[in-house]
Length: 416
Ligand code: EPZ
Image 1 (cartoon, rainbow, N blue to C red):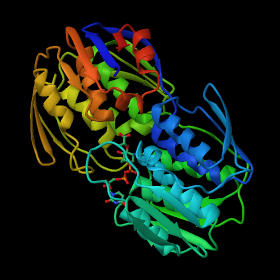
Image 2: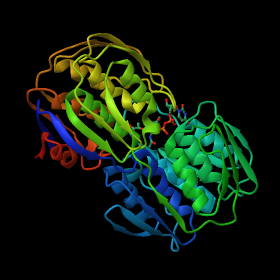
Image 3: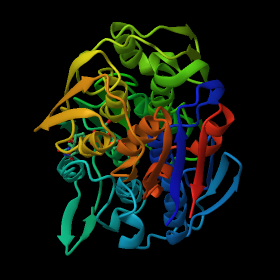
């Protein structure tokens, strides 16, 4: 099994170019199946989740041509084959095929989705929404079978503004009869990116960046085109790294508006940086102030940025309190940080982090994608050599992480 070998303690300078957003790309690719003949996506990140989604496209007889970060998807020969467990369980986003294939064929069979082990992660809101549109959902063993004679527009109020449910219901209702209104919808930037893609296909959909999305079902959609928006979580991870060990580290190709909550929080912690419209230049902060933060839905502090931010707080002068409100089990990485010498203590959804602590190198496993990113940051600031196992979880979401970090002076490599 490949491992990451990280020899930390080297200041990082130069440019890191941010890739297309994982959480957008993993919805855009399945959304392509709504097109009758073809569509095109640019700035597609080359990450493990996308590799698996491409395998699912093959299962449903969807052709594609991929060159660097551009993909053309051909849907003329689409066949509604069941999506098997060995593919669906590789990631959360396999559930977006429910929305698209239900819209196209009024029937879908798919095994349970997978994803990082950070909480229970039910998909009841997706299911209730499909049912409200007129579908019947049956679970047989570990498989969802969803059928509809007809999908009919309706008003769906989400009990929680779930990212996945909002996108899945936009996809499912795109070819439904009449108008669907999604109330209490999530409004993360990735949802706006999907809305733009659906508009390019010819869908009449309104409510981008709001909590109320109105979809007028189309009879057919085609010729979608979209550029994947910058990955705000990848950007946040590297901005935090700059605050830990940067020397004029430049994070480029971002939308600073997307990471406003992180930037505001960094300012409160006394971290200085230069902000231009689409880049941040940041250096090591020698006097990080502790802070209390709470993860929230967008535009609040993102749960996905919480683990790398905890690594920063291990170097703050005093005690910080983190309240994780989105997932029940997102502090596994913190006990691994403790093995390196950090001082964190979790109690339910609250984590207490006391710094500054000197970290020592260790051999650790990657608990999940963002927890893995937190450990990579910790290793990069730690003198000596840290080894991280199970790195496929990190490669799920960070394009060319080794190459990007090497280019700015990190000593990091993949070893067998
Ligand atoms: C998306 O997950 C992201 N994944 C997650 O990214 C991210 O953490 C999350 O949104 C929140 O921003 C993808 O886009 C593939 P939710 P999603 O539905 O859509 C509960 C990463 O590290 N809930 O907004 O699954 C759920 O259990 C990952 O990149 C229900 O109870 O998130 C969770 O507690 C991890 N019922 C909360 O809502 C439902 O039907 C938020 O989930 C749906 C969700």
